[in-house]
Length: 277
Image 1 (tube, one colour):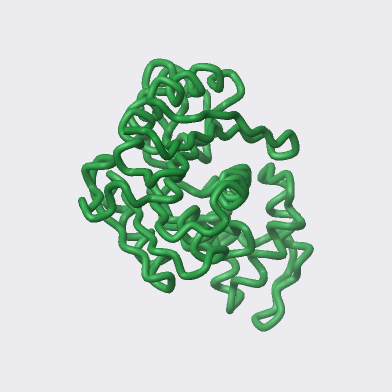
Image 2 (image 1 turned 60 degrees about the horizontal axis):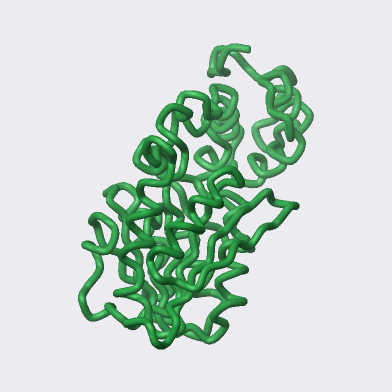
């Protein structure tokens, strides 16, 4: 189905004040949206006029991810602002936040590395008691987006490559270091769904030859930044999990793998033991 436009109306009549929900559902379903009813409900709630509704549906039908159409993504009950060119937080990453809170429920210093939109940092800030929040990303678009999402939490967001971006005052004080690193092997990036491949930055997806290049760098550098008893958490895939666990262990962290079958989520957790140099 071609994208809708002002000269190609939705397949049902619209009222200027009350557009027909069935027409939106029909347009989305015809375009191949599996959850057309749910998406239509969100789009209808976002649009303020019939013209704005037409534009939103047009964007979605043309293949723009729903979250970019709406301007936000739901994450652990929060509305996280997203923008074109910024990685959209996935629901499975909520498991990383759950595991971080279970490991360090009283965390006072939190770092969201490879932060993208800042969703992980925002969710941790919302669940903890006024933590000191820092976040960093190499992509300027992500940094700009994260600053908005972390503003209410007083979060500080830096542009730069992994730990190089962080202020030295954080070194050795981090209770939760969450790093949602890119972990798609380079050769598999072209196989990703079009919504990710065509609309999200390559730097947020491509993890190198085996997908673990950035993970290994984070694991190697983490002990210098973690407080005694502080934890590093990184999301990975089932296939990559053994090698990821090995990278954490080689860095001297007490390591375990947490799995959520419902979300198909795999999170490697490493703890800096108090005696670690």
